[in-house]
Image: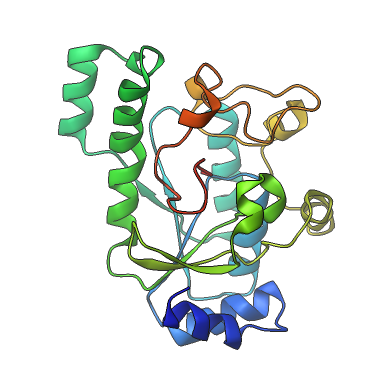
Length: 240
């Protein structure tokens, strides 16, 4: 853990997620950013930010391949809170070149092609979104996968050169669902259909009982190859 992350970790000890988010916003004014993919956890944090008028920029990666249900939640969230959610799109030149050369579904053909698609649609836009910020907030929870149990709620992201904060890191899924119900927060109906993790539509399926939380992401690949770089370091999988 970097010295900055260590300092932040000390400052938020004993604080609730909302109090910790407010502390981060005060510590890094205008330099705190939250990435949402409109899943359960992200909707909880979006509610905390918007409902309490915290000066934290909320953004999403608009890959162009999201589920219709995801767009619906996005729109409902805008209607409910009346706050902006900033969309970051792929660079159109790189996207056009890839699709022109390999077609719209090249990611099914090889791990290399899939990673190229993730790089264009997610990684490069993410780096633009994070530029100029000091703190990146995510909806990661320890319970989501074995790897994530060995992370910290505050950590240094070496790949993106930024401090990351996971405000509901220690929450259970039941706590997340209860918070959503208690606060009447819009959520993605795909969660009720066996999709615990929701990404791009062509790359996400429902999981079977007993399968890993992220088994529905890039299900045609070997488990060891399932990463694309949004969350580097501890987690070899990706969240958003």
